[in-house]
Image (tube, rainbow, N blue to C red; front, side, top):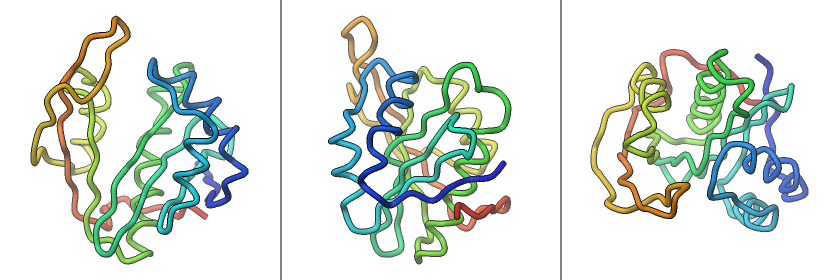
Length: 154
């Protein structure tokens, strides 16, 4: 799957619309643009527009800020390709580790991350807001990069 590297804040609208399809707690275009404007932050967008990953690199560490794959396109390897491409781009920028948070009840995403070599290194209590207004725990996961499966984001 081909990816496009995005570092331009003008792409906030596209990413916000896709994010809104995927999450109950959505991010505005202005918020995404403000993240893209920060040094070391980039997004990889699936060429067909079905998903994106937003990552920030600082020194030798990187963090997945969000990963969104539209519901109709899930379970087709898009999430795996996005994580691999994002990790490859982060490694190219000097990162040696990639962190992320995932809801403890998001079993599909947890399985994806574990297949890619992520391991739990912590937990954040009441980190996410659920659709019914409740709170749920996040698992903090870490993987050393580059991943064995590396693709190019650009």
